Length: 257
Image (tube, rainbow, N blue to C red; front, top):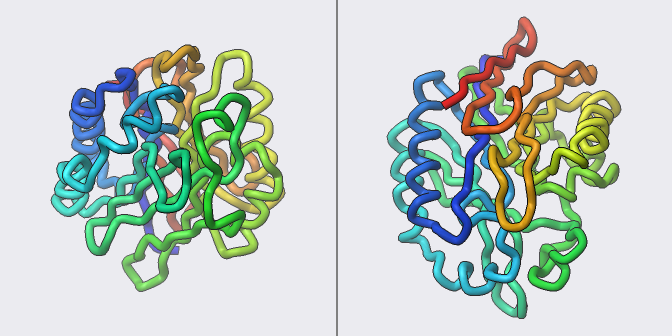
């Protein structure tokens, strides 16, 4: 395996303030570039905060010019950047909870959350493309790419979601989430189980502060393909969990910002 460097960005979103969140994203991207990160994932709805009643209006506000600074950063640093945001898909009454991966070369790639949880069903629509796994390739130095699957929060609680990603060839399962202190133990057990059962490296980016009406546990983390916890952000606050993968194994380091 060639060497790859990934990161989970534990960001702190300002509710419904896209401009402020964009600047915070850019600061984390710059910090990640100093570690040579090639791909980083942000939490669920990182660009807007988890403000479900405002998703529709925020989705209408977001245009390609909104994420243009992130696209420029992706090109500047040679880094793929996966951000969380609401997206209004054609033919749907409600927006999707989505991720957009901005690549240094090529067009942005959209993924919509497949499994909605609780009140999300009132304010958002599930993926219009169904339950097909969403896997993208990160090119490697010897033309051997790393296959990375996307997940958004409750997706990662479904055993079939990680299983489908592994069957589609994913080696890394990258999830942007919002998980509370009360839910963290149960959810992290599921992430560890997915890693062990499907020989996946599981990388999870959680919010570093409360967003909407919900508290967050922070503690963005990653597990190796044998289920070993490789690293974890120690609680709340903005930070990076940097994961290095190569032929010698997996290593994770944390930087608080």
